[in-house]
Image (tube, rainbow, N blue to C red; front, side):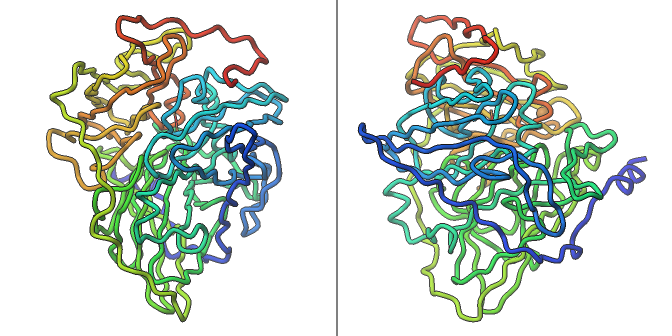
Length: 482
Ligand code: C2O
Ligand code: CU
């Protein structure tokens, strides 16, 4: 039976992609500095027609363009303002995935932006250099809004990262890769493909990188840094190169690692990021591929676990600019100690619920006290693969199934893949931004599950404060922002 299912559902584009389209690099967002010294960005959510290449031309949504959005970039210590204008005909929100910021600025389900409205959150960048991203988070609509194209990268810089001898020229040797599975109809238009018996919703059968179908990248330097974001709705990718060449993993969701880790596969679930550095030789060609991911069950294939894709061809120039080897040490990471944790919480992921409960906009599930460290234990007890994402904080993985974490889980994380029978202990610290009434979210980042209610809310409070109640939503009003 398993075999029938496997054969019937398996997608394999290896060797079948012709790489005819030059990879689009999302533009760096322009910004201005206002009278208060704040860096101001403008993002307009809009409808358009996007040309993915290869005859795939489709209605789509984007920020400041027809599909995806510009890359926002800011430095630690800077105050930023983003004017988010919604020109769509329906509500949306824009969440800053991985960002440490006040809950009212977070862009979660409570910070709705009505059609025609502009929401202007502002905050101070207060976390290490990292590759974050932004996307809508309207409850029940996140999957549709992201799939139509609303997403972009948000790169943070700090002196420790900038001073390292790493490739860091955007679009030249430091390349953003927003990898998404997509499906197109015979008319070339985007379709939402949800395979029969899929437990995770949309699973496209083709790949777009930065909104480019069948892409290639011209590499002009000996080393190239790829900032990979799995921007899919549900699909898990297991990236590696077609010739199995090793690469150095240098960063994960929330920042650089302490030291590079050489490997030849990196698996990323929806929402996770990895920064890798790969070496090429003059005239060299290699393909970034997604091998079949390990999703931990026998029925894996139903949820894309047997699928393989050619993603992007790297084409090295005949002459390459030299580059120093990746430094042996990257950045120090302060380890959070379990001895400091006052609270341990358990999160059981099952069906479309967390701890048996579904998302209720009016219910704050618990409050974390400011200036405390907590351990969260996350389990998956069911047959579908899930993931777990926490807003506000970056956390550290203490153990995965009782063992020390593998290299890719040794740095700062905000999203972890939680397949069946998996048990994590993670540790985090809540440092500021108390607000008893406006919650942060924790949820499965399979967007279909999230929309179906696999999400909860927590507040960060002062000592002795109880969680309050989120404000009621008046249709057509933008909340938050100052
Ligand atoms: Cu990327 Cu709460 O989401
Ligand atoms: Cu899930």
